Image 1 (cartoon, rainbow over the protein chains, first blue to last red):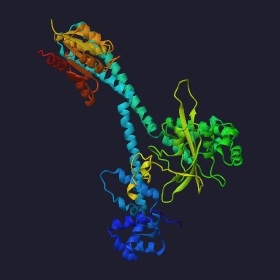
Image 2 (image 1 turned 180 degrees about the horizontal axis):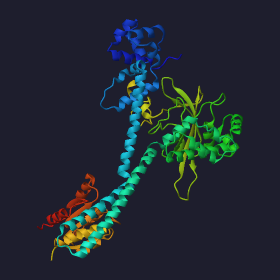
Image 3 (image 1 turned 120 degrees about the vertical axis):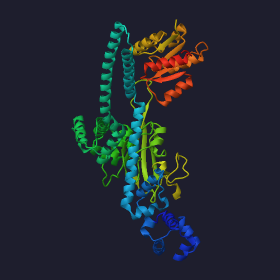
Image 4 (image 1 turned 60 degrees about the vertical axis):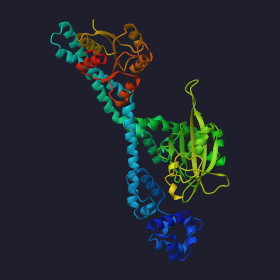
Length: 435
Length: 123
């Protein structure tokens, strides 16, 4: 088993948490302080008896020191700690916590995520109250009518010697304004009631579709048979439990319509054969089927993993970098909110439209992993002359064991990326204290 | 002959009500309902005071106020701003642009009369 790079860091964290001096610990396990120092800074590998002795002295598990608690769990906990402004969790003992109480740790992480989700909802809602033009206009209408009614009513009530013509006129105005008030109040109520649907859509339509894609692994078997049409899509949408409103269904329909078009242009069996014959070269496959490279990349991601087919992830984004379609891949985290790593070939492709990019990247971690990424950015068909082009970048991701090509170090997103000195860094990492 | 007030407001029934109470209080009242041509109306009437709504068709009351204050001929006219929103932000904008007073809808008739008397130095 390969020794973890970070075993030393964990030993150091644990020792500091216990308040032990390096020299004392070194003496207890029978090595020199200098040697222990090298171990703690990950300059010497460690295993076997020394690791067991250290674990005993540090009152912990050897496995916890060498493997650490689940990396995702620890990252989640650090993220939660970082977000909290009031509490002061013992961040230096996070591995210890996650290792000893995995269940509680998971609960903390799950709650932190839930809070983040809810904060987004609140943000969206308050945004809506401030910027919703329909709501602002309705309220303005209500206030205007109330103003007219109040002022007119006061005149009628307080002017003793009012001329009958004026009196009639003001009574008519009052009736007019109160009719207007009741219809605008009614409209407002209808709008606010209908708004409960829209609210959910604004927050989660994209999430709903992401859940649908993830559940299916971006392989929709019903759309693979030759005779199906859009009727099948309607039925699938009907059945899909993850889509909670019309907005989400519309988004999902668009995604499925495109899937169907890809499947028709490149039927499953012919596509597999073509991949094999071209040595898995998407460009030649695209030529063979006379389709765009982006369609081939999507189609590759739609193949279920088998012996000859590696599991593949897929990310599609628009010109703003916003992810519009995602199929997650183990070991290649796709951030749910906020921007991802700008070094992803996906974004490089966006900067070089129509130029296909093939790149091996490394995801950091205790056990760094390599992925082959293929990306291309293409303009979506223009709706009219002189309209600005709308680009869409597509990237398919597959794990590779080794490579003789140059490897680009990337991350998931800056917040959880340990690459301190990265030129593309835009915010500090919450893992900063670790290195 | 009383002082003249120009009311710039686009809601006909509000215009009618305010005109009525101002006239009975001794004011000579002129009205105008369009934001775009409001400046012309001010120059034409040369009123002693202005009641100016913020939300007007064509041009916002804030823009009109800004023009008024920038022009020496109209810079000193007392202006009572009317707005449907009473948020701090609106009040700040009105203050910054040089509104003499600021009042949120719905208002009471008596309040309008009192404020107008105050800002024109009458009693």
